[in-house]
Amino acid sequence: MKTRRRLLSGLFGYLALIVVAWCALVPILWSVSASLKADGELMSAAPLPAHPQWSNYRQAFDLIPLGRMLVNTVVYAACVTAGQVFFCSLAGYAFARLRFPGREALFVGYLATLMVPLTVTVIPQFLLMRAFGWMDTPWAMIVPGLFGSAFGTYLMRQFFLTLPMELEEAAILDGCTTWQIYWRILLPHTRPAIMVLAVLTWITVWNDFLWPLIMIQRNEYATVTLGLVRLQGQYATNWPLLMAAATLTLVPLLLIYAFAQRAFVRGIAMSGLGGR
Image (cartoon, rainbow, N blue to C red):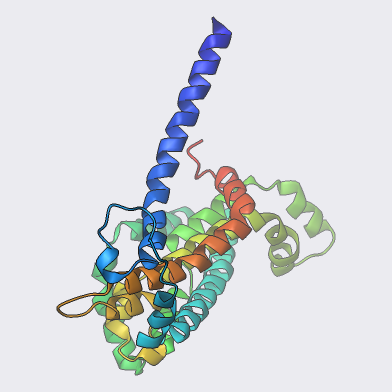
């Protein structure tokens, strides 16, 4: 009986995972299929195009500077991700290891900023960017997200707390300074958490639409999300071309996650974000 129950529970578990995976994959598969169809063939019942239109991908590059937009988005995401990893790990180390007055109250107040909706901060940030003269420049896309976040700091703090104190004590006995303890001793052990933070930050910047819409007007500095919107016509939209562009913007995210999958899952499990 116990063996049968285990088999049934395992079977239902796999069926549930298959259903969830299928629900997640169907939109992606439909997007790829639609990107290869002709405009009049889009709403047909056939799941695959009768004659794949590979020219849709070339036309997407002809209508908008999609290559330039992809490069812009990569640059923005890389800069913001590097800044988030550095400053969040630095703040996380300070909150986890250093002793200073008001540490807990300051940390709780910092976490409370997670409750502030993003739309509340848009207008102050817009006014700052205009005062600095950074409207419609790459600086408006990089600087606001460069200096860390409450979530990233919390993630790194939780991971630093899991590291044994013996590492730090041994480093102090060897004469290491506080910076050396952070940079050379503890930070290399936080690679799983760094990978989680890097992947989540990259995806957030890559998918961001509201901030680029407010800040960027010229295609020279536009992101891929703006490019997808600008492919939509005022009265009619060539959906196969739009799906082709959307598929191209999805490829870098899939490559990043495929490369970082093991470290990402390990970091989620070890940082306490997995629900344990």
